[in-house]
Amino acid sequence: MIPRYSRPEMAAIWSAETRFRIWFEIEAYAADAMAELGLIPKEAAKKVWEKGKNATFDVARIDAIEREVKHDVIAFLTHLAEIVGPEARYVHLGLTSSDILDTCLAVQLSRASDILLADLDRLLAALKKRAFEYKDTPTAGRSHGVHAEPTTFGLKLAFAYAEFARARVRLEHARTEIATCAISGAVGTFANNDPRIEAHVAKKLGLAVEPVSTQIIPRDRHAMFFATLGVIASSVERLATEIRHLQRTEVGEAEEFFSVGQKGSSAMPHKRNPVLTENLVGLSRMVRAYVTPALEDVTLWHERDISHSSVERMIGPDATVTLDFALDRLASVIEKLLVYPEAMKRNLEKQGGLVHSERVLLALVQKGLSREEAYKLVQRNAMKTWAGEGDFLGLLKRDPQVIQKIRESELEALFDLNHHLKHVDTIFQRVFGKA
Image: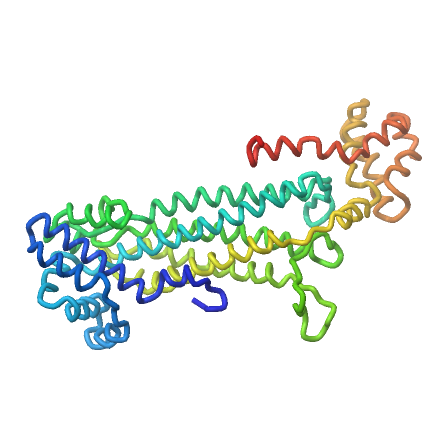
């Protein structure tokens, strides 16, 4: 985690203090269940809570113990015993380290998911607001970066809204899949504990019981989770890239907000660069980079090994913290985005009406020409417009083969911009529902 790209709430989930607090809660809830089952004295479970509930776990002390024992969970349990006293001998009975580590990771990823879902909600709200604001604002649709047919800027944002709405659904499923608890002991057989302990801990932590854990929670769950984050990151990059293109000098249809006192370049005082969306593209690449290690973690030796452990200690915090920062930044970009409808209008008109070529093609076909003949006639005039020999409508009016089939008044009607926007309301209803 890099502080520059971290937000406090998400970063706190991955702090050592939070991790040790969750470890304590897992052990204490397990002790409660053991006490209820008559496996340990109830007073012992009570003492664990009394001593540990409000304790401040000394991270430096735990680290010092770990340097000696070379085992993180044992180091924590040793420190916990220093806090709890003799009753600590009843802690961790029949459990194994993975029970604590995997269940803790499930809690952390669940909490991280909740923050990411809130981030998506903010982004969706911003996209919806701006989409309706520019629902009927015409702009050039582009394919291959070249003008195609007209669309609206609102539709561009509606498309992004629909994409992130799907992302939210996927993340909800991923959260459910990752939120499982394993307190099943060595190789997952419950040989030295009771499945009811696992059920109790799961309920207290808001998790589901892992059906079969083989000592560790199966890593296909984690792979799916990080893959979902990777897809969301790709959606972030897609929208950020669109804004970057629209901010290019030659386009100038939208740009990031530029605050008073902001500087765009150390050398060129005139610069207003899309630095936020460029940053988002880079952050998205990093989130996606964590997907492959998560997929490779699925393959472990027999019931378990720990080749996944070092990977998850890095990608768990980094992927969630980075995506949280990116979604927050993207929402801010959309909320403050500067939009220039007049520039969109100028760009639409820049090619002299070529954006209406398909309507002319279809009209000629409806007048009896074959598609091939009609295409040839339209393209012939379109290429002259490309070459600067006149506007498209004027050239068509002067083409005897075209005028023979379509009257001038009919041709002019084919250049009505509203034709391309007549179903915008229908699309908005599909995306946002009826008002």
